[in-house]
Length: 234
Image (cartoon, rainbow, N blue to C red):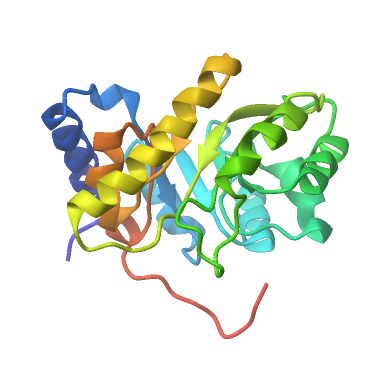
């Protein structure tokens, strides 16, 4: 049975090979290890293997891990799941990043609730790039307005955009969607110098996302194995 360390190395190698194939430096791409439903011991194993960025989808589960693993002070914790307004305070107080901001009310709450002794919360705007009714995220035409409002909030730092494209088996179709996101990202970066993060690509569309220009890819089961869901909700 392969170890988390071996799995992590394999994913890192895939990222590096894909980056070089399309003329990019592997150092341009951050690997976010999606650790939802996984125990703290798995996160520690990945940490010992050199991983520092971890993504959590469920607020209370994530806060529990952040608290338990507080001795690993250099972990960069990202919240990457849908966020209800009544749980925004926990994200504001414990995480370094929130990838799923899709409305100004939520951004305002995160800014108001971010403790002043912490650096501004890094924000990604979630874009519903495939226009799926089942997915969170703003419409493309709403991006510029929301970005302009977020950059005015004192305890937030707009870093870029995120998307979860609809599943596509064909590489060329994956690439076309990812390139649309990349154009939005580059247009946004022209207006806001701190925008430097395009969170795009998971295991199934990793190659297309990197080819299009993703700077952060989110990988879970390829590192930690199949997810283990409990019968109780958050």
